[in-house]
Length: 255
Length: 248
Ligand SMILES: Nc1ncnc2c1ncn2[C@@H]1O[C@H](COP(=O)(O)OP(=O)(O)OP(=O)(O)O)[C@@H](O)[C@H]1O
Ligand SMILES: [Mg+2]
Image (cartoon, rainbow over all chains, first blue to last red; front, top):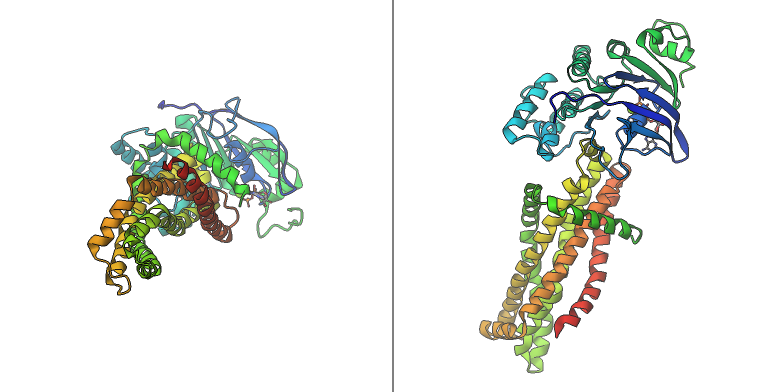
């Protein structure tokens, strides 16, 4: 494992996917550059999670292709030599393993380091997400936000070239959200890792993104820089970004 | 049920290919073995004692009536070694261990833990299926040997204590030793290896194929146990047939 992994590019071409006859992704084209922080926003149910799952090979598209680092993912299984990490929306910790076993799982299974070094890395990552000393806890003893942070720590240990975050801050308090946001930025600067962040958190999006995509109904409605996003006049995008309790424009356009 | 057989066979092949990695997973194999021993040793003992006992009770008095009571040792020796121990232990293990495998893997499937493994480039077959199948394939045959000995003992107890049979320990065990050859024990052993592989693969496959929520897990567990038992009984016939060819 090199100390400075380079981020990889992601290219999506005409991705279509249906579940039980319902088309969830309806032809997605996206190019994500190496080392970029790419944020995806969009209404609940618009297909963001499904799209992330395609990038990391957990789903196969009905049509179209996914190229990571210019190569399609291998047919059967495995990630084709690219190190990836994913923070699941539901954290998806292994419930029968302790927190530190969860975080160290990748290193342990791939025999990357001897045990004492693994232990050190695990402690380091847990400290990074503010969970120092929680290593012996079981996932069932954690709050939702703590699970999420363990999941982030777990995704970081492999020093991935591509990191996918599915709503990393959805269960965190504002302080932690900012910490995690800063960490996403820092990782990106330090390691050059390509990051794809799905979030509903408007501050996080504008705070970390190089570019933002707006998905709705399985299509990309908009791609551009945060500045361009804020200047966008598409009513759906506008509402999504600016709505609050006081604003008087309608919410009926949001499907 | 027969729709799954193809998938079970595929999983079997993938597990076979993964065998070189078994040393890496030795701790998990040991966990499985412990689980099998811990969960089943007492039950196996009880079950075997009564199986040997009931066969003695059924056939002992009838043999004695006809003046061939001395044959009881061989009769019980053979039926326990060739049939009863391997089949009954496999069914016990399907119920205790197979169900646990299906439930555990099924819940990992439903709660996306298996997806998480994939994103860490960890092959679920190596990580989950291999240690379980290897564990059960080592554990069940060992349990079967244990069960044979206890079953013979159970038969002996009844043969000696029951008035209508009234054998001595020596008579019983001498006849057993005379009639049960190493090959007969081996037959039971070989069968139990095959049954172990069936229970392990069927249960893991059901777990991996789980869809839906808690109800899906329940369905997988039921199917794992029922399919295992049906397959054990069908396979038992054909294995017996096959092993008869090697008898002489
Ligand atoms: N495995 C599946 N089987 C059937 N339908 C699915 C499956 N996965 C996703 N869907 C459907 O695909 C659509 C998009 O789901 P997805 O999880 O991608 O939404 P999302 O954009 O991540 O929403 P949220 O912001 O609420 O997480 C939903 O309508 C969902 O019902
Ligand atoms: Mg989602």
